[in-house]
Image (cartoon, rainbow, N blue to C red; front, side, top):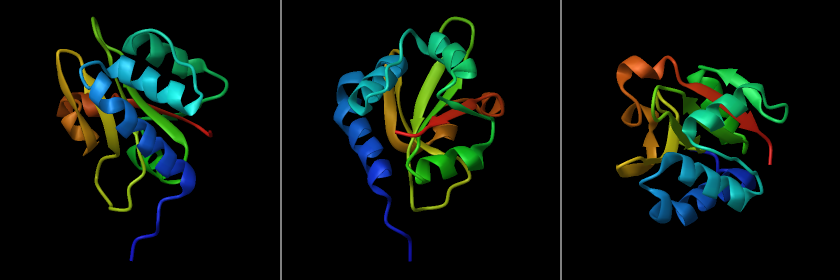
Length: 140
């Protein structure tokens, strides 16, 4: 039997649900709105956020470790996946799940289209890009 999600993990999912409809067409806008709901200030577009998280003292750099990203989210940490690219980068909010998946579960907006809710990140990036996605976590 799966364990219940902890209170902080549930709060992060609620913040994603609260902000998704308004920001489903903008990944960085969605992330900033979720962050604001949780009391975490983030600024700029996806590339700027990814660059900031790379060296931010209050964020743990998890590298490209999919399993650790999911574990940190399951433990109630605020986890962001980011990939900087030419033009528009992309960011997602990794959320807790009680169901094992090969890829972390996340919410995201998509520039010029609708993102996804509570879906694995292999739907957010091309397969060739997944190995380059970096994850960052911080406690709330």
